Image (cartoon, rainbow, N blue to C red; front, side):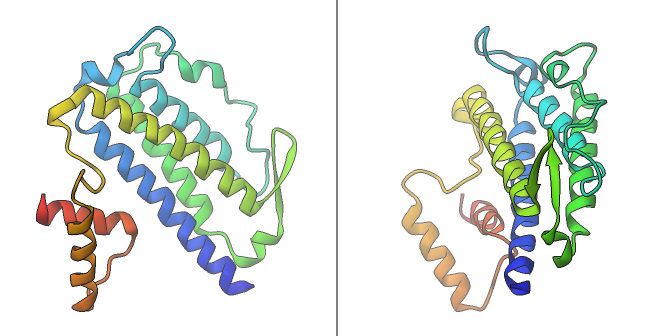
Length: 198
């Protein structure tokens, strides 16, 4: 059981890192105007999604094991309002949020996985709490990528295996494995492929 927990823990950390990196590689491709743009009146801008994820990160992962994940000082509704926010201030908020997550999750021990934590008063096992946030962030990272790709159109630098290149990517992995080369994560393999082949 301890080995399963250790493997899950390591994979969860790597998955969070991958989603953070994917969002940032999309964000770095857009202009300031595109960062704050709305595609329609009901949509969120990349800036708003960044602010919401950062607010969630700072609330959920601060004092993770000892307090409710919905902190009293969080004002979720204001995460969807941009008032005197700049790209720089929002990205600083983003980085603080992710650092809060990694500070909390990396220090978890196998024994901690036997505990429960509340989110809005509802008890969660540690695995449930991690999975809840992992799926939440991946959902919003997908939105960021979609918006950035929409804005950049033909100038978009792909973050995944390009269209009609799956067979070539599979061969790339086979060749790397044959020489004993390994990557730290699935995302690293794609990034290495893009750097070398695209």
